[in-house]
Amino acid sequence: MSAISRRLTRRASWLALGLAACGGRAPAGGAEPTAPVRVVPLGQAIVLETAGPPPHDTVVSFLTGQRRIILLSHGAPENIVFAELDFPASAFADSGRAVQVEVRPRPGLYGMDVATSLALRGNASVTFKYARYFRAPVRARDVFGTDAVFERALAIGQVRTDSLLTLLPSTRPASDVLRAEFSAPGRFLVAAAP
Image (cartoon, rainbow, N blue to C red; front, side):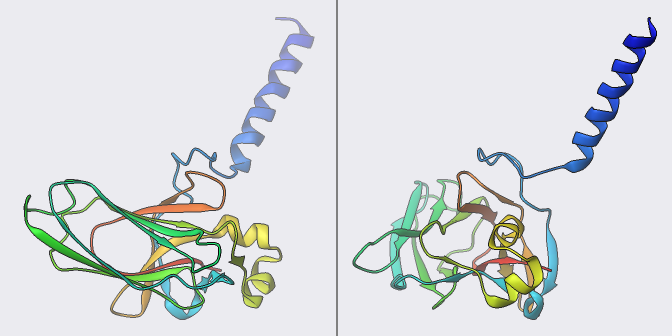
C-alpha cells in the first residue's frame, strides 16, 4: 500500500469515527427512539405548551379484540389533530368485552389523562402532533437556548404516582410528531428534561 493510500485510509477512518461520535437526530422515519427511558422529578421537566384551542374531553366505548384509533383534535375553527391513541386488537387481555376509554386533555399543554375500564395488556400507543401550535415555555429557551434544540430533546413522558415523570422511548414518525408505546393508562405529557 502506498503512502498516499495509507493517508487516505487514515483520513477516512477518522472521518467515520468523527461521524459516529457526533450522533445526531433519528431519521424522520422514526425507527430509532429519541431517548432511552429516563425518570426525572415532574417539577424539573419542561412540558411543551400549546397555543391552540383545546381539544374536548372524549369518552369512547368499543369491543376489545379489534384495533381502535381515537383521534383528538384542537377546537374550532381549524380542528387540527392534537393527538392519537392507538389500541391494537391485542391491547386488552379478553377479546369481545366492552371497554370504555376516557381521555382528558391537559389545558394549555401537550398532554392528556387516559383511563380505561379494563386493564391493558400492553402495546397501546399515544402520538402527539404539534406542528401548528408548538409553544416553547420561557424556561425551555433559558435551558435549551432555541426552540429547535428544545424540540429535539422532547419525549413523551408518563407521570407516576410518586410525582416522577418517566420519559418513554419516543419515536418521530414525521416532523413535529412524537409517538410512544405504553402499557398502563395514566397522564402523558410531551416534555424535555434539562
